[in-house]
Length: 546
Image (cartoon, rainbow, N blue to C red; front, side):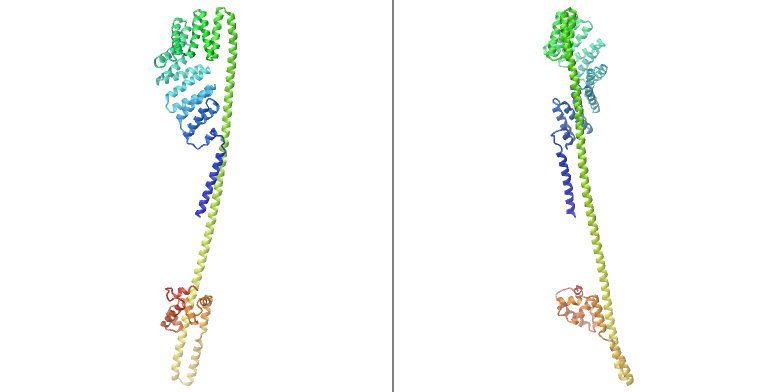
């Protein structure tokens, strides 16, 4: 039974392993998102693998990279790995911003802020507000941008994050310059002071240029010239071409305001040259507008017309670029949705397959379990039947033995009663014979007749009846005994029958009209004939076999 159970368990395990292997073989794309989802890694290991794969794809295949990051983010959040989730949310926001999907970028910067807040990382909360401000700025939602830059500046100020704080102030200055020049100047000056005191001065020239522009708009040209000169000196010494391109444009505006048109023109042209070198199409367009206005003010209508034509070309180019960006953004988001749908469908299909395998495995297990139970149940029933049959057989045998024993006792009792009756008749006959000499002749005949009648009852017929009853009770006894011991005499067979009935030597002596000693001698001779001389086995036990 134990062997059968072991075989059953081994068969069940083999089925389970077979199905597991079959499920694993259905995945053919190595290191795919689909495969990683199903790999039996630990949670952190799986998250790390997804992040690594997403990082590899970030430049060459942004939509697939996003897919890996999104699944990693979901897994990290579900498993409480909030530090990993924080990093992933930032990466997702960054990819969406680079892909110009600003609404998605905003969504994940918000998620980044929520995660940072949940783990108590105030610096990252500030960074979240900063980038939300930037996204709103790019979407021209200036009031929202102001709100988030102010929130960011509060966090950075409390945490002494001076570089990030100066950037926040700079953007606030940029947001205020159209509505409140004094406010704009205040924030630009704060940005410059922080950069000068705590920064590397790499951004000082840009902040000084912004301050100079505010002074120009306020008609404070001397102050503007001083700030521009300082900005130029820093940018030039640091070979900061990008900042120089903006400073040249500011110089153009300054000299235009001072009516020094030639100088203004030269600086505008320098600015346009650098912007083109740096592929700043939008800035080329804006500077061309300024230069066109300069030519118009100078009465150089031919130059203004030429610039207008260039302006028109650049404008068309910018429109095409914007349309291209919009198209690529829409295409990117469409591809992303398709990928997400495809991955979700693939994942659900695999889950469905896994469910089928599980159901099949459970079904096989239940089927085998039912077979096992039915076999065990059947064996128990059969065992119960055998047990009942054996008990019934034993009961019948016991009843039969009891019946035989009762018959044996009955035979023994009859033999003893018969012996006692015969003894009584003999005693009476002997007493009557002893009295005959004392009686008259006429009475002697009567007494003799009585004696004859009594003697006629002392016959072997009763013994024949006994023998017949014994044979009916033990029909094969004499035959089997003579088969093994053919030299046994009738008297010895008769003794064997008495011993078979478990009669004592005294009872046998009474029945056979022998002395007890004579019976013992006969028993001793019988043991020799039965080859029991050297055995401790009793004659009754030995003869019970027959």
